[in-house]
Image (cartoon, rainbow, N blue to C red; front, side, top):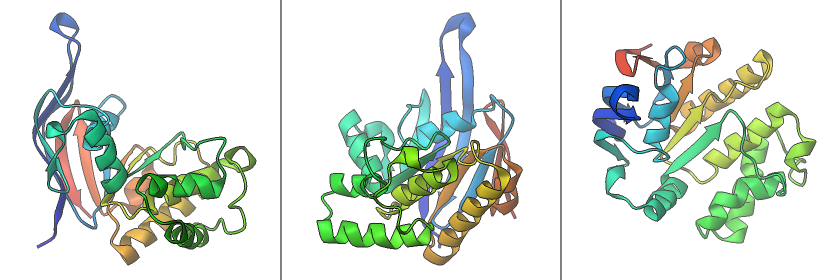
Length: 229
């Protein structure tokens, strides 16, 4: 039996109240299995990013349950959630979110530093992932000295280097040209297949939909289809 890494039950999320209340998510039941390469898709305003933010604990639910790696996110305090994210979830954003005053090496090893991984182990993992993402020799550069595609490669390496249970990627190709986006997606699919890394994307990019092994479609905050390809 495949391991369930994310499990939501009757998930609801609303913003505002009264006449201005917006139901962003309605009765979302979703299981993400270890090794999934899944895309959450749907039109703008369908709730994709809201769902991803809830899955990583950056936002809270109005009602329902969510478990990640067997732990209930609702039962955690803010500091516990932050620590849980560091140890179990890798995040990739469309805006890269690299720390501008840190080098490539320092950006990638930052989470491991918070996890108290030894210096020797950090350097070895960073070296390996720099090679994997095609950035060897650029470890001492700063984000401003890199192209958009290179910055996103750093962000992907940073998300994966701490060996998280799941990697959540919100529109990771949105700021990239199609060729660079395709290269990065193929790289992530390679990590998924060779290392059994679990990826969940929030996207409307046809390139991601094409490569995904599973498509979860949201419309007006509800899952209307969940297809294995």
